[in-house]
Image 1 (cartoon, rainbow, N blue to C red):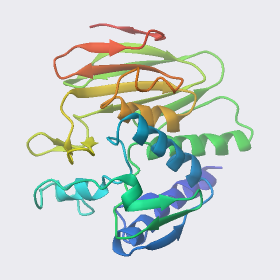
Image 2 (cartoon, rainbow, N blue to C red):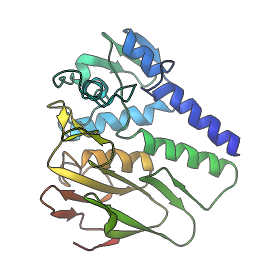
Image 3 (tube, one colour):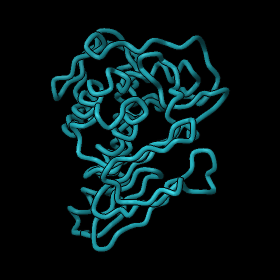
Image 4 (cartoon, helix red, strand yellow):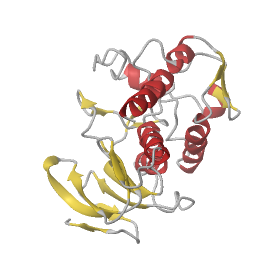
Length: 260
């Protein structure tokens, strides 16, 4: 089963990684055209579209080129190569019909806002298919729990990785976290890009989202940097988020404890 999991991860990487030259995403970045994705791509792009609309375009899979310009590129140069790049509107950049992505000009697709969570779900699906009913799939910040009992998860303080701002009792759900202190470099540069400006966001510095699937929790953890509970009311989830002021906000239903 381990070999099957490793093969599935490698397959996902060959499609979505913008850090390898032979991926499907790399081909799309080099040449316009119509590209067929694997059948499991539909839930990922469908969620992105919902988040794009709920956040007024702030969350989009089109931030790849903006990240590269800021230095988060294939070579991990971590050196900006120019001024911030505008992120093109979804409907002007490409069309998605559920199977094919059609691009009129080269674009750098980046599914980092929800992709790792989705891969957690895919691995969990393999475990279930092999008769494993109780498990935790933990992808460093994105996890899913299934089985008896619960998993007590610490919520890392974004300004001090040795402490936690609270704990969450995770049971038969997924929890995904995101913070601006992770994948950060240079002066105020990090991986959470506001598509409206092409710049790293500043107001919110950490988010935690709990949902039925890791795909949904991961996407919502990103959306929470740009939108609050009202804008995201169409989704079933719990959350907490910390602002740059130190203020912590959480959903009315929150199966955890916050220390701040």
